[in-house]
Amino acid sequence: MKNPDELQTESSAAGDGATVAVSPHKQSWLHSRRFRRHIMPWLFIAPITLLHLVVVVGPSVAGMYYSLTEWSGIGKAEFVGLDNFRELFFEDRNFLLALRHNLMWLAFFLTVPFAMALAVATLLAQVRIGSMAIRTAFFVPYVLPSVVVASIWRMLLDPRLGFGVALENWGIKGLAYPYLGDKNTALAAIAFVDNWHWWGFLMILFLTAMQSIPSDLYDAAKIDGANRWQEFLHVTLPGIRPTVFFMLMMTAIWSFLVFDYVWILTHGGPAGSSEMLATYLYKQAFQRFEAGYGAAIGITMSAIAGVMATIFVLLRRRGWDV
Amino acid sequence: MFKKKGKSRLIPNYIILLLLVCLALGPILVLFFNSLKSFNDLGTNPIGLPRVVQIENYVNAWVQGEFATTLTNSLIYVVFTVAGVLVLGGMAAYSLARLDPPGDNFYLVYMLTLSTLPFWLYVIPLFIMWRNLGLLDTRAGLIIMYIAFNSPFAIFLLRSFLMSLSRDFEDAARVDGANEWQVMTRVVIPIMWPAFLTVGLVVGLGVWSEFQAALIFLQRDELMPVTTSYYNFTQRFGRDWSLTSAGAVMMIAPVLALFLALQRQFVTGLTQGGIKL
Image (cartoon, rainbow over all chains, first blue to last red; front, side, top):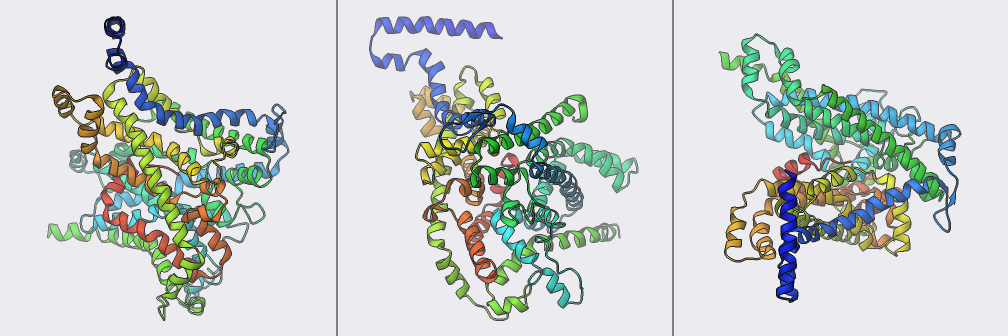
């Protein structure tokens, strides 16, 4: 496979030299085979790649270096080795608390939205009349900006003006509660709000995957006398397994990067009860100007997310997936 | 008789689905109702229909939230980011799908791996670099970042769309003596509109809703997009729900209108790979 390719390269290079020797116009080089086949394609790719290198890749590498320094973001960074990481893992209780919250977040988002999405996609797949309208309704929360979703739910979860008060007016008491203001419920309330905007999208992904399962598999299951539950277990679930698996992996990665909903709803409070790695990083780097320390948090988050992704990729290689 | 049985079998499905539809749309309806209530009405009647419709909330929110400025800013960010992503990402996708650059497989792996680098890994050095380059707290600085964030998705989607198209038209144009630039602008771009629309919608929605980068990289009020500006607005008028609700409705109305009009393109785009935070 490689040899003809190389041969072609050499012959075109040789032909190129000949062209230049015969007619020394600039035009001829632009029209030469070598330029057309090897240089020009990369000129099309170069601008966006340079941009991505400057904005994303370069700073990522720099971040790894800064995580080893004590630095305010201004002036010279002082190299301190792994000191930041020692402090993070052995001294900083706020960091460990945030890490724990991210793990709880992970546990919630690997289970609740997946269960809801699987159940509802199964119910919706059987329905014909009104199916498109229902699908649209479930998708709408996903297209709303996080600031609006947060604003809606801050209103509805308010102890004096929220849904609890409305239910009280109808005779159901005890649900008017400062969900976001109590340190025992704040994290759960934020997870609920984030999930409200997220699970419908997950459901649509599963539904799309379900609809690509060949219908004769279902016919065969019916002939074998399978009930609805057996049908789900032996036909539907294996059919959408790649999608479920991929989304589990993405959820695992994202769970360590969550910021918007936490910041908008509680700023990590009250009393650090909903602090996450991202909000903690934001506070360290952009409010206390501990750029080196913040970079160390960033590396830690990214490393954990990377390990999660690697675990999933390895599981997939082991045959957990089709 | 069989038919009847088949239909009644689905009644539990409909009941559960409709309850969940209420959960999905109910809060948005409450937002809309509250945007029309007076302050006192909202205090005694937080969920139900407004007793008296008070349209002035919109006028007040528009003025006090400076929506004229911030909606314009958001529109600028969306338009320039989408244009940049489509032009630069489109060029790269065209090259990868059609010009067979040597080493393209390596490049695809590179993009796939490095596009997963998380925002929080590079945000601090990027912030310092932007400050040193004078791009911090500028429109251009934010747009350049948004183009870079969104480019891998655009390259992959446009490339796979192009690869699903036949090369016959392009070859015919080449036979007629068109050069590569003419082939791209006269033949390829016109047939790529559906893919451009999908990418544009996904990227545009992402930029319109973007919060964390705008929060970190912009300080001046007059440059803020509607998201961070609205966030500050809710901090300032925290308990005036009718005012903040009116602001929220103005922010989501264009998104919802566009979504309902172009639902299919939105859903395909978002499910194909616009799966993001």
